[in-house]
Picture (tube, rainbow, N blue to C red):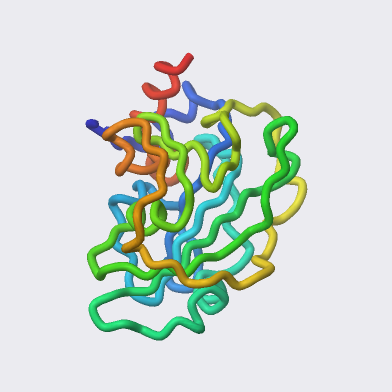
Length: 214
């Protein structure tokens, strides 16, 4: 799939609608950076963290970063996992977001953090798909661990975050990224992961994807 990148200002006027979907965050020092690329284009380092947060974003307003810093997420998820030669440990935070943003009849699960252990060349998508169930649509990550149940990048109007992101509340056991994949991929484009649209760069393919589903 050809992905065209262009500046945020190029789409802000024509595409002002906000959508709720899984936002992808990567580590930049001890802060979160809204990623302009999908997880398959990332190669997280040993001892690092990545995060997914279900939130609303538009060309002019980005979603909220997770509450816990990357360092805190890694310590909570991977502190008890010893380094393994030839492998890497990457903490992955799954934050299902604000109840006010949840689809009708659904309740977002509490934030959780996993310690994924994979090969040194494992990309963010490979690590993610082996620790949680994914629901995808033509390369776009629509659901993580069954949330939301069926919708995919639904337009939202007049949404303002009413509560700050929650902290993770429990440590989870480490999961090896070498396990059998559990993703429910619906096309060969799924390894592209989420086409992240609303950061410093916008992905044109997202809008074509949205139009194709209308």
